[in-house]
Structures are given as structure tokens and as C-alpha cells.
Image 1: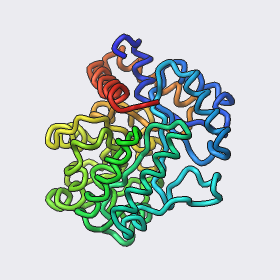
Image 2: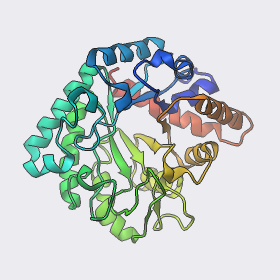
Image 3: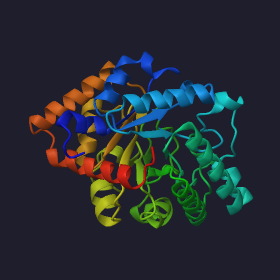
Length: 332
């Protein structure tokens, strides 16, 4: 991985999606794969038939310069990407599974793991480690195991361990906690105005407890006043990522952004957002659709590194995290 060109290293830092069922129908996506794309994210629109989808995954592997993370949001309940296969949700939500107890959570995670492995995938953006403390929260709710941080930790560990046992990479989300928001970060940037002590004692608690178990963590597009006076999301905050998650908590895994086309990050242009996030310590970026804009963005970032507007060391550090996870955990 260290022998990659600068452009290939930057491609490694992206997890991209494509439109429709056939990846070959998106020339920009195939170009990205051949240029060193680090990961692929799949959505409901990509999955209509298991065997056709397996063929698409095989096509992606064949066209990839380097084996990519093959990722999905398969939480259960409201967030499942296999809805077209079953005519709706096939699994219990995190809350419903937790209400039935640890054995149900373990069993369901095993089932999801087996399905993802059958489809050829190796990364799931789960467990949700948000603590559901705000009844008016429009986006978390039953995606959270509980309003009790200890319950979230208990079930989050079961899910994390079960995915790892099944060679699926779990990604804990949404750091440092999306459970107290009253707006949806897909639409706008929510603000959490809690004291640092309250954040640590409730919302950060599950992440902190699982810090050595999680191979990857997703950063939220949410502003936390306890970390930053400037209204910026955690996903571009050096105080959140580098100073706290890395230095204070000692996290040694991969830091991935939430989808970079969401409303919570729209305050910045895609280039500004990625530049700030790289400086903050984010290692990989999700963009749900690969298109000309995404390819141009990657080229812009490479130019910025060459012009020393972005520190080359930040890129190499991210490549180390990506490479370590691909070698030690991923089973493409």
C-alpha cells in the first residue's frame, strides 16, 4: 500500500456507491475502482436479486486495483438495504432485538453476518452506539438499543464481537453520539448543547467502553458545543477526532465519515469538508454516488497535497490505518 501513487492513496480514502444494479453502467465508478478505490457502499437501489447482486460484487472485485471494503448499512428495522429482497424489513430493529434480550441480539447479528458473507460483503455500518435520550429525535429512535448507556454498551459489544467472529468489519456509529439531537443530520447540521461531563457519562460511554474492540468508528455530522464553539460538525473537528478520540481515548482503528452529501456537512464545499476532515484525522470518506464531481474532488485533493495545502503525512497515516484493517480484519 505504501508503494501506491499519491492519487491511488487518495482513492483508497474513499468509499463510493453507484446508481442502479449494474456497476459497469457507471464509468466513473469503474474508473475509481481501477484507480485504487478503497471501499464500496451498497444501497437498496443496488440490490433486487441475490444472485444478480453477487454477480455485481464479483464484477467490482475483478475491476478493483486493490481489494475494497464492501460495505452496507444493515442495522435491522428501519435501516436495511435488502428491502427489495423481502418486500420490507427482514430483521428486528436494534431496540426490538434488545428488548428480547442478549440471545436475540446475538442470533440476529449471526443471521445478518451470514447473509452479508453470502452476498460477498465484509463491512457493516453497525452497531449504532447512540444513546436514545431525546424522544423528539427524528433519526435515531429505535435504531438505538436503549436510552441506558450501559444497555447500549452491553448490546453493542455483543454485535461487535459477533460481526468480528464472522469476519464482518463492524463500524460503531455515530461518534460522539447522535442520540440527543432533535433534527436529522441528513437534512441539516444538528447541535448537541450538553456539558462535556454529560456527553462522557452518557453518549460517549458506549464508544469509550468498546474503544479497543471496534476496528472502525463513524464520525457524526453533528455540532457539539462542548468540543467546539465554532459551529462545525464532529466529522471535521480536530478537537473531536484527533485530540479526543485518538489522543484521549486512544482509538487505534479507522475513522470514517458519515455520508459526505448529507445536510449536516453542506456548510462546506466537498473539497473544504474533506480538507478539514483530513486535518481533523478522518481516514475515509463515504460518498453515496460516484460521479464526475467525486472524481474531480479526488483530483483536487491530490493537487492540494502536491501544493502542500494538505500534509502528506495525514494521507500516509490514513493509508496505514486502512492497510492495517484490510490485512488484519477484512476477508474480501
